[in-house]
Image (cartoon, rainbow, N blue to C red; front, side, top):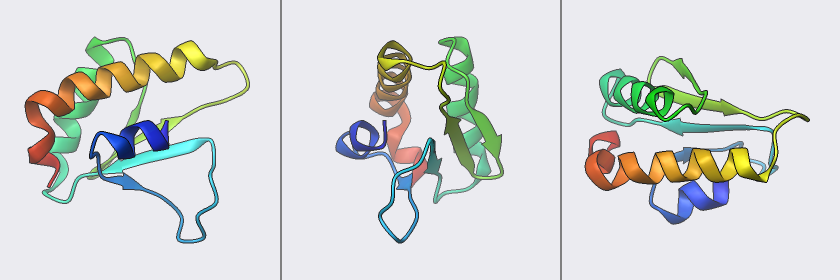
Length: 88
């Protein structure tokens, strides 16, 4: 998920060590309003992601699969095409 989001220009927030985890965050540099808008859009697309201040947090577990990642990417891409610049 992180690689796909990064490829579309989304502001992916990752640990400094470069290690990957089951949690992927998009951090809005322009404030919490854009992150909230993204989270509402994702929910409308049936993609679960948590809002944490100016960050949208995806958290994958053992029961998630490639289709879940693809759905999250497709929804995020749809939003990014329309509003991506608002994330700063």
